[in-house]
Image (cartoon, rainbow, N blue to C red; front, side):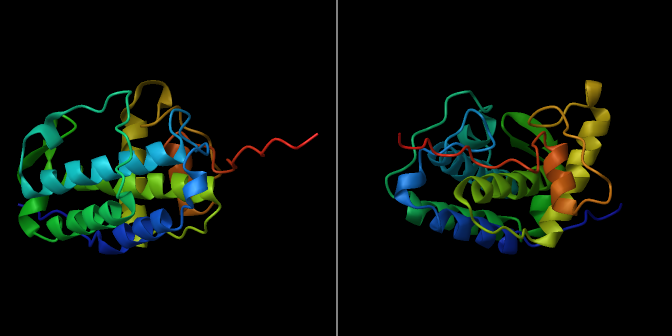
Length: 203
């Protein structure tokens, strides 16, 4: 039986935690590449998915792994600056257990193999890391192992989807010689050229 390819979530988790730490309080209502999410919503979503995929890795199945994502985003916790990095660190630690990558688990109410859940988690951290960086004007260089896992996952998902649909929206065509991050972002349904809308000018 072939062992699943594994990698350390720690570097990407730390990158996302650093991006969260770099968000000023007055940017929480700013728009993001996710039309339904402001920056604060995105941070709340990241915290929730980190809990879900932490517990999926632990095979600690219950409400955090069995609830499908809904349109409503939970309110950002009051102490999110402490909670987000802690939860991301716990996610990374959970995936360091080789048992997390084998057997079956659940996430978002979906049964899936452990290594597939890991690929989904990597994709969430890479793509939403880009969302957060782009919407708050921060530099972003994702961990290469997580980026490659995200790209492979999205490439397979787009190939399987009807009409070339992406995980988060229709695939945005990106030149094949573009950087891997841009191609990954395009596969997710985002425009790699997205920039925050300009603030309204005073009359």
